[in-house]
Length: 342
Image (cartoon, rainbow, N blue to C red; front, side, top):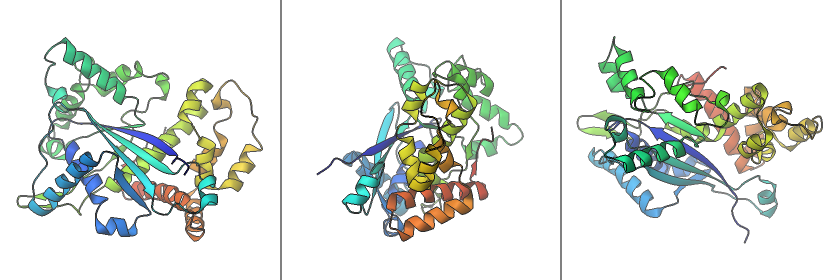
């Protein structure tokens, strides 16, 4: 039996202690185990670590059935790995035609206490820096802004926001988003390609009342997978068109990009575009990842048409990816996602 080909995406989640990071990941995973989701979805969300999955599901059921919020996790930089696997893998021919068989999402949780408390010594300080740098290699980073704390600071919102961002890089960020941006630019290979604080999501893991937690009344969580899988590709196209980025770096970022474009736009579109493009060049920006660009830039009517065609042909991977594109557009329309226009 051939090995399953997996495409891996990483999400880093930053937020102060008590900002809801554990609630968020528990709600994301637990909701994917509900009967309604399993009945309607074309894919399963599987925890790669069974014990982790059990713990997250218990957290979710505790909120749902007993209004019990998960216990705080202190000083633990915890990664959670989930595999998004198609329910119907199709026949051997369909499998060979796919660019990959499953998507793995690795969720990194940065300890909120590290935002507010000084390291106990040099060893912990080095561990924090190592963890922070490793999380910066993620495809997407979420910085959680506590809506209640922001509301409590009505009229003085900047105080809370400066306090939040001060905790990200102590004594370097200076509480200022611009300064934080400069610090982060020094940690990445192509500083001009850094996108920080330019996309905004409205997220709510559940509706909390004094005696009940309504886990089905959540907002924005269904956008996490589309954001993790497709939004970085949009950025990739923007970077390739705007910056002269060395090909070796772009090739790493765009691994299997043409094949992914095939899954999104269809083989005929990709072939037509690639036939027009030179096969050589010192920088990938000269080529602008044409096939992927064509797929990413398809208008909404074309995406709807591609989604309907994929469903009719029972092409599950293309159905899921085009649905992710539709979900992102709907998120923008509903005001749940504000994307950068740069």
